[in-house]
Image (cartoon, rainbow, N blue to C red):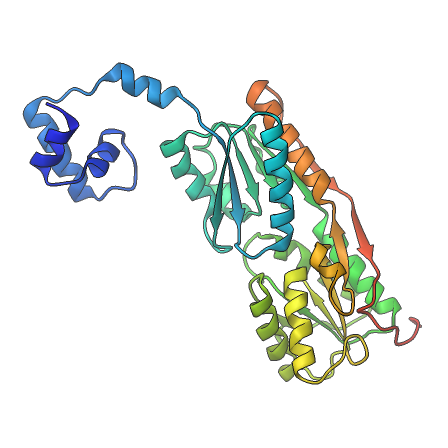
Length: 338
């Protein structure tokens, strides 16, 4: 008896039968029970040697990108692919929704494709905390810190997002801004935006500024369209704002378009600051003031650490890479801080 016979007798496709025989999770219980019943009835024995060889063979390095419109991740991904290919590694890239469970996806992918290792671009620490343990290959998380999770096979490299966001608020304060709005991300979970928001709260407090999230914060996804809509909602609610801090350049660029459509000038009527330091921010009109993350170092350290982990036993590494506040043309000085 062959796998084709099992498919014919069970009424399921070859793909479904194969997933059942290889114990994959993405099969209904009804299909699993029917296929296994046929196997038991006819005494089917798979070729264990061939299956063992297939199970042992490892494939490409997997790169999971959280979000489809993140300009920063596009820059890092290009560098990662180039570096891995220079080292003779095949690369498998998957783009996930920014609210997707990237760890669950990785666990399923590990069963199906057996990658040598994983590079995560972006990630929710709650998913890593509760679901990561089945992953046994070397893994690296970029742009969020896994330092406190305690996994031996998970390293991380990130910008100190709280410190960087705080520096933005301090800068706006020194430029005379007292009514500052914030755009992007969300208040829940342990994603990158939550680190930046913590920095915002701390900087507002040390500068003696009131910050009411219900009035001055507007969540949104990381895209120009979402930044556009979020800026309009925030300004309708708080028309007295003199500055906007967007938690991503892509959000800031959408917000600048929204301001222009409402007849407001940047920075004449309202100042805008972004976060990431993407190439697009250097060519906007006006050029966007932003936090520049060191994408070259993030990619280099991530790939270097992953490759070492694939070939040698080593403890996990957790590092923060430097950031720079690029003071360009999108912030107006209203007056010095008192």
